[in-house]
Amino acid sequence: MRKLLLILFLVSYVSNAQTIDYKPFDEFLKKHVSDKGVVDYDKVLKNMDQINLITSNFSKISPNKSWTENEIKTFGINVYNINVIKLLAENYPLKSITYIREPFQMNFISFDGEKISLDHIVNEILKPLKDPRVHFVLYNTAVSSPTLRNSAYSSEKLNDDLNVATNLYINDITKNNITAKRCSLSKIFEWNITDFMGKNNIISFINDYSRVTIDEDAKISFMEYNWSLNK
Image (tube, rainbow, N blue to C red; front, side):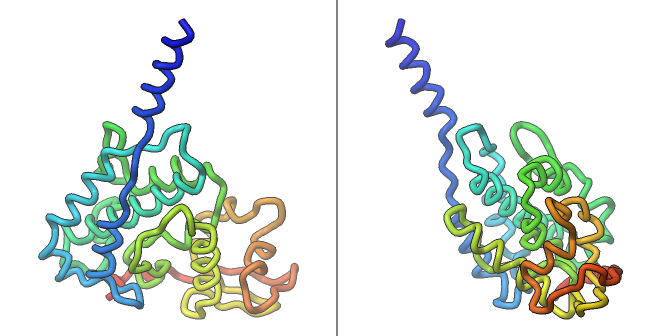
């Protein structure tokens, strides 16, 4: 009986073990994304077979209980970014992803035997992990979007990479205008405001990364989000 249980455990472990190879996605990004995070969609259109293969391979994998939180985050971020590029490319040319009907609510991503949306990845996979820094590595093709890195994320370096991305976005004066007494912040903060509250408040979160220390009684407003295609 004990041998049978051991065999069943090993079979279960092997079946749950999934190796994720981010190298093809990494190579794709290096070929199609500039150092400034601009996607060459004309070039992407010539290599749709490559992007389709990457998304297809990702669709065969789903997080399970053996995964660490960093592994889940890394998977969610990479799957989100490759699929938003694919969606834009499939509808290119256009001036903004908002020209596509419900781009973030559309169920077009194959995942765990069903079709899910970009919003599903954010709300059901990433947000439950309670790490608001992920909002600054999710590319949505817009001018006001976080910069798309031209390399894939890995779970081993994710914590440092999230800190770097958050720091860059918060201190980008085209995304946030921060002074000690008055702050005009990206809509990302407004849309996800409860994610940034945590144990303290939104000012406390920003002060962990901002080059300017914000007063606790500073006035907060939110900028208009520029949805024009970043190109």
